[in-house]
Image (cartoon, rainbow, N blue to C red; front, top):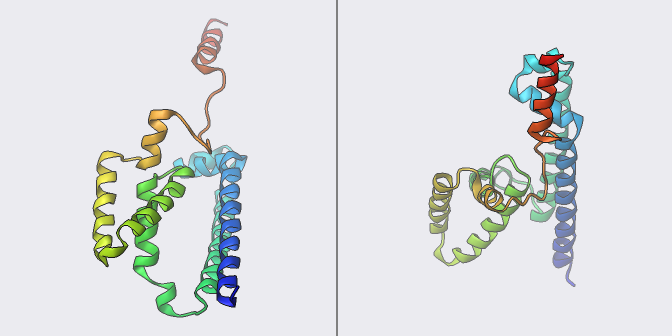
Length: 190
């Protein structure tokens, strides 16, 4: 194996390990008490503060964790490209457009959505590789169609029809509506 191929193999395994670790961290965070506090801060910061959530500390933690993971990804990209230059770091097509496409196609607000979006992006790039830069126009049209006909993305459409979730992050009330009704009735009659 040539040194270039060995470097690509190492970058692949590092990227896979980083992706799995990031998905695991995000899932743990969203299912933890801190994730619940983040949702409370997102919905209403003053209300979250009134129930004891330290919004400033929580936001600082999220900013630092995001910066750390982003730095790791950036370092891995530069190792893979084997050069550091402005066009490698600030390419609008490579970063901004693809990231937005991945999230819109896969589905916002889920962990599964961006994973599916990446798979769809790579499949579409392979399909449209012979058309030069016209594939960017095709990706834009596909993105618009998905936004119009599946506003929650492809994963949202799939999950709505099948009920399958690999990373359930939404919290549900245990016991169902009957328990809540009994509690309310007991409180009003007691």
